[in-house]
Length: 374
Image (cartoon, rainbow, N blue to C red; front, side, top):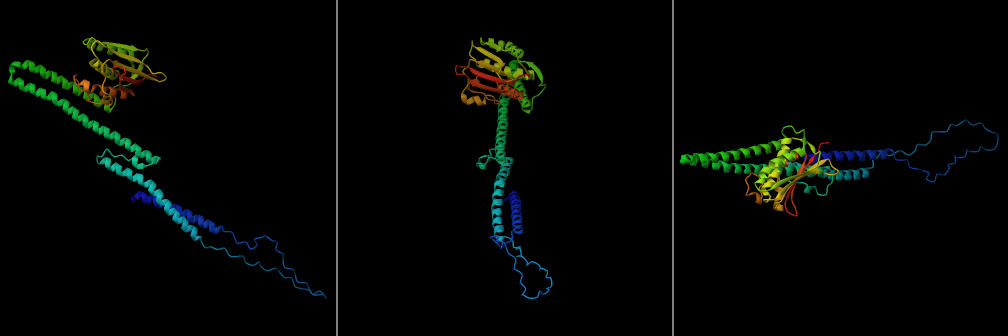
């Protein structure tokens, strides 16, 4: 047994023992005297002796003597009740000490396991059918360790993916430099190749820095009033050039007076990432539709971007906003799989939500919800 068990046990046991002895002493001191007249009959005083007939003789006056002493009160403590109460106190104190100390000891052991790197430790099931603060603490511990495990695994995966993505352009850069030394007459061609790979690495590092800043907290001024309708018009105008190369169109349907507070550059980037992603995956000659309005009975804005592509497998929907995730259909496009992850971080930093889904009638839909300006 641990120290906490003995502390609980001693305090509870001593408290109950003192209570038992206190009750016993009160019972002993307030014990009523035995009743010698259980029927409560009236007691007649003894008759005075009658003097003999004849001349009346004078008798001296006799004072009544002191009353006979009553029965003495017993000061013997009630041993049997005290022993029974002490035994009951011992059992109750043991059970209560176990009830409180066992889950706390389990929590301490679980913390030691997590400190040793075992992030898969869970103790919620060990609480059994408890429904109290200790059970809530155990379930909170499970939620914390699950979150920590996801964060650590995400960091490890991110490090692996970054290493992989940087290795390829670095290898091509090294190859181009070697070939340029061996074939000086093709130096211009190899310099262009080096420039392209350098730009790719620059874009990757920029997106990684953006992702890191968003994970650390919203950078820049996030309390600027944003006209979402004006922002969407700007995005549609820029996206139209890219969509024209596929004979596609971008159409915006929006309500009036759509305002929110935030960082306009980040909100612009979050929406633009989704629109550009939709242009990549929609078939030629189709339309990308952007719809924006308010959600009834709420103080939130809803922005949806829909394309006419084939969507993605349901098993990949949960991972679409993870860094470096590229689904089956994305393998034929250039990119690092960071755009949707950056979008989610930006939306979350603005107290919003983003989700993706396949539509039954075909196409892929991404919906963003943000709090509107009050």
